[in-house]
Length: 402
Image 1 (cartoon, rainbow, N blue to C red):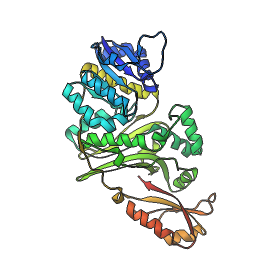
Image 2 (image 1 turned 30 degrees about the horizontal axis):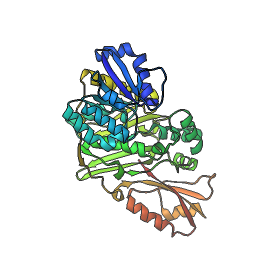
Image 3 (image 1 turned 120 degrees about the vertical axis):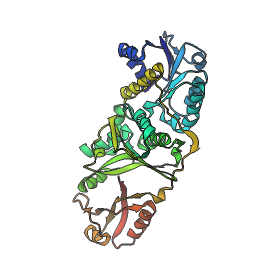
Image 4 (image 1 turned 45 degrees about the vertical axis):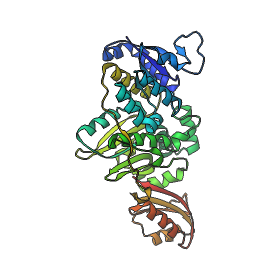
């Protein structure tokens, strides 16, 4: 019998308990033993159920508990409990991307010292089995580029806006009703959740800590139906994408809304699904796709890690606390679609001399066009020059092309 403790009985924690209960026979076969939830730690009261406790020391000091599932979230209490569990010689499984992005190097080093696993498959990509194949690729190859749609909430909202013409506000409300978005959705729609996931992937790829606070991060809060109308007219759609390129002197990394050509595989990733696009040095590109949000996909990934810990299938997940340099974003090169309001859109497009542009009857005072590849600094200078063209009123939107 393997006895475990679940820290936090929210969406993921309760999902882990349900998956273990519903699939107990199959899971026992895979683990070689029955798995029993001995404790659940939660600040709420659950009358009459002795499984629930409020004092982590009970779990910490119980030698019968060999695996701890940290599903509290955040970087403070979760860090304290995960660290104490490892020090007590217990395996830790967590879906907490904030914890791993901030404290991954320290906790992985501690796990290695204690000779116990720290597993975090569910922290990136939800139900997609992503981290293990990503890490396995590093055994014989080098990752050059990793990109992806790694936030199911953003992808659901943008899909609703693209396919149904839903407003951002209504799409966000729908995401909250479906449980994809929290009451405070800032971490998701602001791009911070996806940014942390990118930092974990870059940390694994480089073997060094990638500081997510150094990554250029933008959210989807300012995306409008007009952005989709012009995007479709120019044969693009809109996705929130993270992309990191490893260079000799560091890494280029960004998490932001991108225009994606309609023929690109990323353009077909819809609703709350996620996808990761990996380019190793010697292998052709690999794309992994699956459910990236929701209670059960994430819980299923956590349970897979519980089985991994039970059978001793840990993998060599590790990076040091030496920081990989995130290169200044001013030098990042992208094409862009710029949309402006002006007095005479047709004449304005002649002045900018673009090979691909759009004028839409429902937006009579607007023009949009595709630029040539340019750095962030060059794009800023271009916007200043545009303001000098006769008839210019305002820059409505600037979106990078993936």
